Image (tube, rainbow, N blue to C red):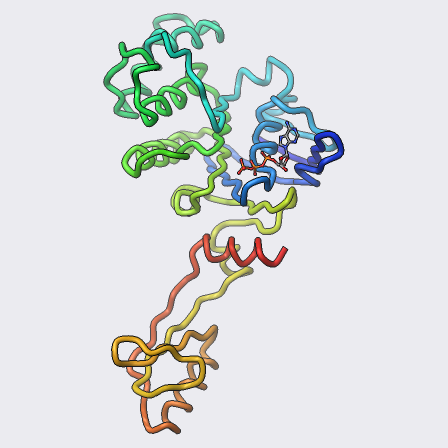
Length: 288
Ligand SMILES: Nc1ncnc2c1ncn2[C@@H]1O[C@H](COP(=O)(O)OP(=O)(O)OP(=O)(O)O)[C@@H](O)[C@H]1O
C-alpha cells in the first residue's frame, strides 16, 4: 500500500533523509522513530505527498501522493494541527468533508462515529475553546473524514495527557486492525512499542535499525541477566543488603556464580530483563 524506494530529501543542500526504503501493508502500524532532526517528519510528509523527494520514489495505493487523486486515499495528521478556532468541531469537520465531496449524510455519520469512538462529546463547542487533547481528537477525526485507506500520523499523541494518549494510540491500532495502512512517528517509544507491528529507527537522515520489535531486540539488544549474590563480586553494586551484577549471557551468570563461591557466598536470585525499545534506541543512536 505504501512503497518508499531510495527516498532522499535535501533542503538547500542539507540532507534530511538520505536514502530510505520501506513498505507498509494494509492492517499494519508502521512506526518511524528517532531523535529530533532525524528525518521523521520529512519522511511522513513525503509519504503524504506534501514534500517532493529529491531522489527516489514514493507510491501510495499505487499512485504518486503528490497527485490530488492519490491524496484522496490519504489521511494526514500533522505534528502541529491548528484548527479554525471560530468554528465548532462539527462545522469544522463538515467543512473538510465538503472539500472531499463527501455527501452530508455520510459525512455526519462518519464524523459522529469517529467522535464517539474518541469519546469527544462537546461537538458544538468552538475549537478555540477546546483543550489540547480535545483539539487533537478533532484533528484525528479530520484525517478520517474522507475514509482514507492510508493514514500518516506525525506524533499523534505528542503533548497529550496519559488518558487522551491512550485513546489516540489505541484508536490508531483499531484503525489498522480494520484494514487501514498506518504510518506514525513518535518520540515516546512506549507508544510505539505498544502499537507498531514494525518500526524503523532513524538518525540524522539514515535508517539505522528496522524490523519487528522482536527482530530489533534480537539484533540490537539481547536479554540481560541481573544476578544477586550474598557477597561482592566484580562489577556488582550493593542493593538492599545483597549485591547485583548485570551480565549479558549465561556464561556471565556462571562467572558470577563461581566468583561468589570463591568469595564464600552464593547466588540468591537471577532475573532476566528484555531491553525496551527505548534502551535499544539509545544504544543504536549513540553508536551511529
Ligand atoms: N523546510 C525545511 N527547510 C530546511 N530544512 C528543513 C526543513 N524541514 C526539515 N528540515 C531539516 O531536515 C532535518 C530533518 O527534519 P525533520 O523535521 O524531518 O526531523 P524530525 O525527525 O521530524 O525531527 P523532530 O522530531 O524534531 O520533529 C532537520 O535537520 C531539519 O532542520
